[in-house]
Each structure stands twice: as C-alpha cells, then as structure tokens.
Image 1 (cartoon, rainbow, N blue to C red):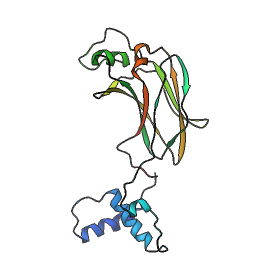
Image 2: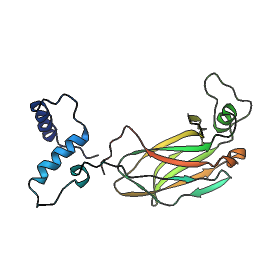
Image 3: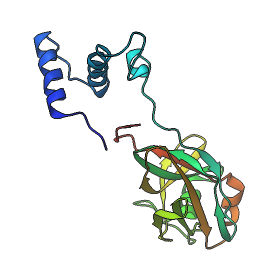
Image 4: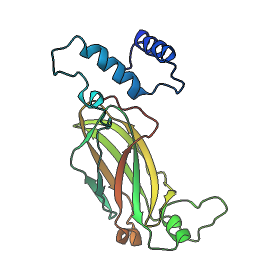
Length: 199
C-alpha cells in the first residue's frame, strides 16, 4: 500500500498547528495539501488529484452483488473489478423464515440458542486473479452474523485486492441448500470499512 512520505505528513501537521487547527488531520486533508503543493508546479488547469482538488468524495473501486446457486456443483462468476484494498465476502439470504430456524439452516447456533436440525449450507469458495488463486476457504460451516429487516447475512471470509484488478469467484456447493434456495441467495463483496483506499 502506498503511503505519503513522513516528511510530507510532518509538514502538513506543522501547517495544521500554525493555523490553529484543533481537529485531527484526515487523509483527505493530507491529499488536498499534497495536491495543492503539486499543483503549484503544474501547467494551468491541470490537477494531479482532480477529485480531491474539486472537493468531491474519494471513492473505492466498487465490487458487485450477484446471485449464487445452492444446488450441488461448481459455479464461477463473471470477472468483477477490485482495487488495492481488503474485501469482505458475505452471503445474504431473504429473511422469510423464523429467525432461529434460518440461523440454524445457515450454520451453528448462536450463543444461548439450540438447533434441532443440522445446517443446510455447505460450501467452499475461491477467488481467482485470472488463473492464479487469490484466496480459498474450506467448507467449515459459516454462521449468521448480520440481521436486517429483509435479510440475514453470513460472513464467509476476506481477500486482498490489487490495483485495477479483475477477479472471479468460484462457488462450490457440497450439499443441496434445500429451502435456502428459495431465499434468493446472493454474494456481496464489500470493502473492509477499516481499510484505506489507495486507488
């Protein structure tokens, strides 16, 4: 991951003290300062960081949501874009069943809960960069980890992206998902909220 040089950070922090700024400097503040310095040496009308200079938001590379099958077999997604940051992989299903029953269908019971039937979800998944494997997870049962008014989510794992990458997801279902197939199962790949986006 590329980070600003220490001397740039120190200079920016000194500037903050000199002007009496009391709030901590954010990454956006630092980039704006660096952009202003670089822009002073540039041709008129040219900006090294146009989104920062214009005050627009800094966006991370988007990653998709797509439906996945829960019938036995191996399925592979189309290529999707990634950036140089960490991603979390979630499986979301519609919340149509009683909460406790749905949680048991997805994986082991939550603390202080019990399940009368074994989980229905048995999957393996891999992320590929072309023909090169990026990350893989075995069929250790996931479990429900997020609950909303319309959906329940299982955290499946994470992987590291790369600059302007195009990855694919391989989805291997080892056991038929039964009634979970009717709940519109879909993968959601999201940037780790605690990770900076250097794009």
